Image (cartoon, rainbow, N blue to C red; front, top):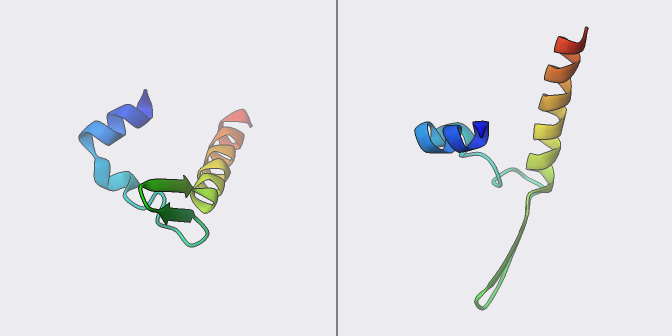
Length: 56
């Protein structure tokens, strides 16, 4: 739900998603494959840090 609200009201906050070095893009004809490896790792680290701050 939070992601949907951010996308609707402030799309510039996640403009970087999928454009980091290490994110994989393949295009062949009409097929596209997108694997946001680095972006997902960064989000995972941020969420882990935030959860650990609230845990203690």
